[in-house]
Image (cartoon, rainbow, N blue to C red; front, side):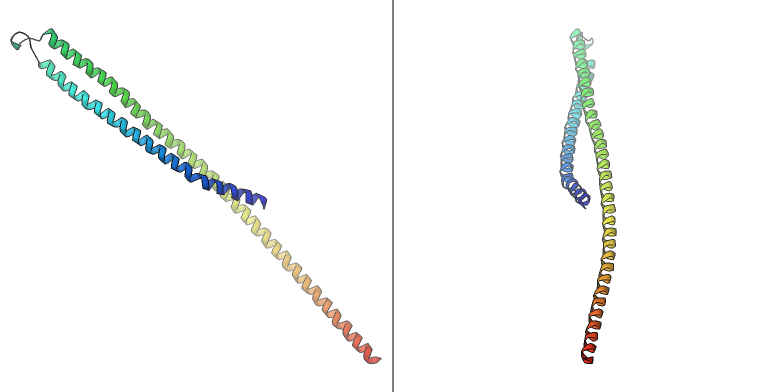
Length: 183
């Protein structure tokens, strides 16, 4: 009986504390989703800036400020090189931010996999607890049924003994009345 109480108490504790951990994971997921969206916006802004800079590069390659607008000057070429350098730096920033974005997604995937594993473990533990409780309940029902049968047998025996005692008392009273009549 004590095992049954401890098992029931443990099961109740598990069910009480489980929703709190679930709300924590929902908040954690919301935070990760928010971080992912912010990072995605950052990458999109960098891509837009790169696109504009590439348009500036195209314009600068066509620009010729040399003699009569026919030749490119060293300054024109340096301007194109500087814009190209900025594009390369922007590409590097885009790659770094994209890597961060992928890290967030990887973290979410790993986190979701660990949550799935954790929930699977919890479900398995709950199923074991339920199975133990069912076995304990079946055992207690069998014990109760056995005890009820024993009690019924004892009651039948008691009623039989009472009947025998009453019958003997009636016989004794009859014998006593007969002996009084004879006297």
